Amino acid sequence: MPEPASQASASRTLARHGRRVALAGAAGRITGFARSVALATVLGTAALTLAAIAGAPLIVRIFVADSGERHLTTLFAYLLLPEIFCYGLAALLTAVLNVAHLLMAVVGASAGAAVFLLAVTVIGIPEVRRARSLLSV
Image 1 (tube, rainbow, N blue to C red):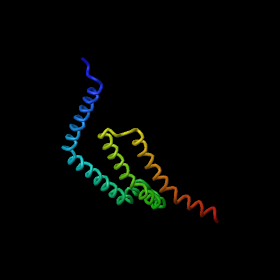
Image 2 (spheres, one colour):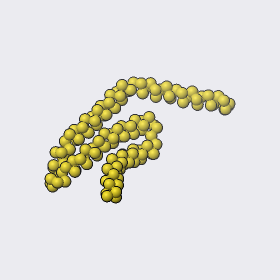
Image 3 (cartoon, rainbow, N blue to C red):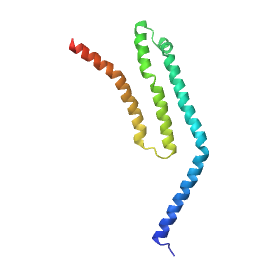
Image 4 (spheres, rainbow, N blue to C red):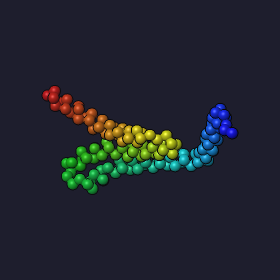
């Protein structure tokens, strides 16, 4: 004999609740490890970013032969190398959302767009000021 609708609904709710409890228990066991991995990822990405920024003149010297362009290229590297940290943080947050089954396609696409807008803003503001000064002369 089939179960009444209310009993079937109640058993589905209990099954979902039991699954949530099981998932919460598993998450509780790995939370400390996950936090350690996330902290190590953030600190490692920050250290890599700081090392790249500190080594920007050496990196530029390896790739740029003209001494006149080296200074400008080094300044450009100082502006754009902090994106390493932004990309690392975006990747970490995307992974966390993916594990929690909360990741949407929009989130992954918006991380790249946010970094692009940041780069355009950093590069564009001085250029707009320069263009205004040239037009006012």
